[in-house]
Length: 435
Image (cartoon, rainbow, N blue to C red; front, side, top):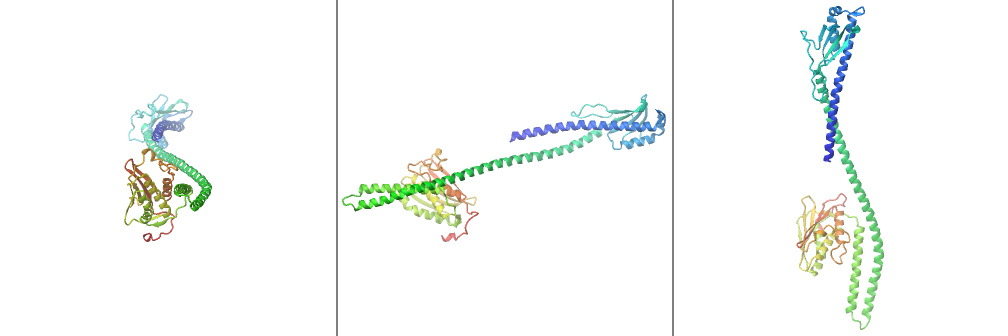
């Protein structure tokens, strides 16, 4: 962008310089052409007034000096660049001299000041000569440089202002167009990404429905068969239920795990639209903590709450948010060994949003894996489904928020959820404090 602006500035500068030089030459040539025309007209008028037969009688011209002077000055009234008019006979003797503008005394002819800047062409003294008819003499016009310079200065100033204004508008239009094109490119990419995401989500949802149907039916059948088998084994005399019961329980546990995997996959592939209501977030967090309290106690993991008092109500889908928080808590409990601690903290953010932290003192997340923990089916633990964290992030993002991760290897991890307090489309708020 900087290089483009520099090149554009150099181009405008060169264009202005060339334009000014051409303007100088054109104005000078135009003034000289006007001087020649005036000299020819004055010569014709002088010849008519002084004609005595075929020749020009200069005595008649001198006799009509006032009339001729008046006519000449009338012709030169709008030609300020003409310094003087001199009428000479064929011997070069001056017969009449008229200055422009008039002076009280007839000045001694002098060389006109035609000095120009370096950008002007070298012109020297400019005297326009128009011969009288019959070669009886000539009319000489002295062209003064000062009025031409003044005209040029005014024209250059006017042209400079117009060029600056035009260049400013052109650059503004150019950069506006450039930024608009970049905006369209980004918008087109975003739309294309959204279209592909929608197509992928639709395909994944369709695939999930088919897989769920194909997997759930056999699982239900297997679960029913296991129950029947368990009842028959219990009815047989002399059959100990030690090893058989252990096998049955292990198989039922795997069936339950597969059912959970299918349900999680469906929840990610076909998420439900959140239905926002004003909720007491501390009460929602406390309900999830009570639900998981026994599970944490069995695994000897301490679950603590640090809830900010007088926390404002938050518009959210309580069911979906509980699922997201539960996934984060279960994930934290699974990476901890006995004696670990998980802390859930709520507080109001500086930007008006609400923050919910899930902090553990576990082994932390290796730096090379932090970018992948939210990928679908990615899990660094053996037996993990790789769907808990992606589902949690998906739910929070559908709430208009985001999840941030801060982790130090050997010291633990913190998953921070940012939740907006309000949404454009939400159901009427209920009394959150009564929940």
